[in-house]
Length: 340
Figure 1 (cartoon, helix red, strand yellow):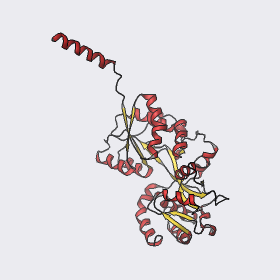
Figure 2 (spheres, rainbow, N blue to C red):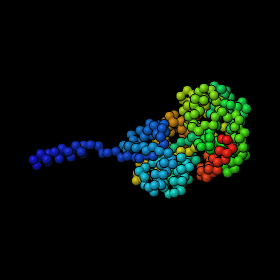
Figure 3 (spheres, rainbow, N blue to C red):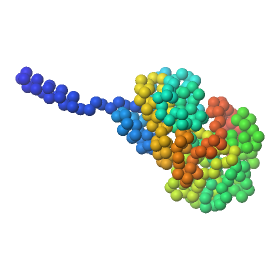
Figure 4 (tube, helix red, strand yellow):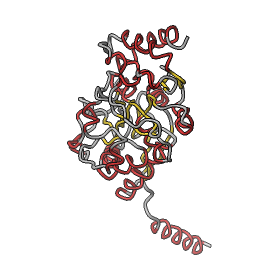
């Protein structure tokens, strides 16, 4: 009996030693939908092949991820967190992130300056933005300025966003800047949009509401997100992006490492994959994300759709801390003056 038990134990030990070491997990909090689907394809596969680690994605919005970090004092299960710039700045201010080490992150020096936190606590993996989308069947001369939205020829063929979404907030900022205002002086934007109201066919609350309108030819022009425009165009919708000479309004999705992560070195390797020319090109082609790496070369057709090159240089990136502070006041006024 003893001999049999010894033999069984020896066999079990030999089998255990023969198994490969379990792969290390990197837990990443990320946005859902196509964002995570394309991250798996463009980033996780290359990272896992290079490191032997396994990426475990946890889906959630910026606000949901931030709430988990706050609830645990930064000691959540996450090793990498995707958050928009407005929320990640709050996490930095609350001391819930740990600094990145640029020397250990490949391609750091190839990024646009606006992509990097001055304190090295977050970095942008891409650019998105709010700009002008136009129906290529109905509009033969692409718009060149935000002011073109007020042209009488677009009366009844125009769609604008509600302020409940980021694009609505950014359109208000664009309208204010166009008419002598600013982030701190938003009143000219309200006055301009009030004048535009008679021309508006739809004030949308969900970005995908515009797709059937473009397909049917119900609208000729709209204020829309750059990535939504690119995705729709790739599926045959007759739409293209026009970047106004005054600049599109930029959106900066970021990645960071929470204070509680014990896998900083591995997390920085993952971030390096996000910033690599290969990872950036793949994400541009699938997610229609503007590259934050200046060395990425996009095909001409894709370059026209995305925040890229000169389009990025001209983009206006509002101070999201100011936007967050002002938004309740803006929303109340919008409801009083625009939607009524």
